[in-house]
Image 1 (cartoon, one colour):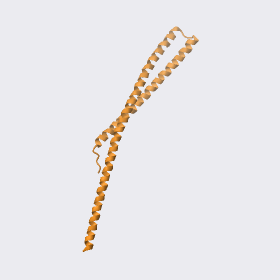
Image 2 (tube, helix red, strand yellow):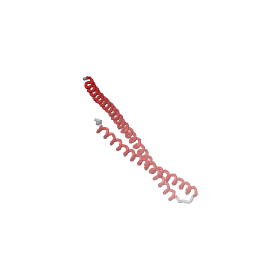
Image 3 (cartoon, one colour):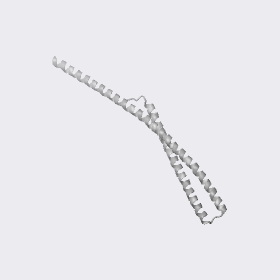
Image 4 (cartoon, helix red, strand yellow):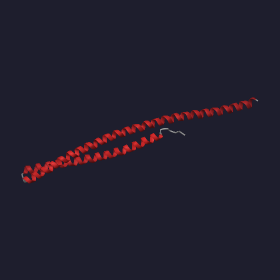
Length: 151
């Protein structure tokens, strides 16, 4: 039976790859959430600016309402900047975790290839030993028949 001496290391590499894949999926989900939140805030900003332009242009709002809209827009601007930073940070986390995942996959594949090569070598040795055993058995039978026939 083939025994890969680095099986524990391979198992650890596989576990690391699975854990990194889970972290990558979580990071992607966080990035998607951050992108959606940023998009919603940007849409609210655009809607607010459009509404402010319409009401200011029509002259139907008071100075207090304009000041309130200005404060709301300033708050939305701040939130947009914060959500933009959060989105960039989330995307950077995806990139970083993606690199870790690529490294984990590469490490595991290298050990898988080593295991396959060692298994192939082991199978070749086993095949050679089986042929040598069969040759020895055939030779003993031939010698046995030759000695019985020669007497």
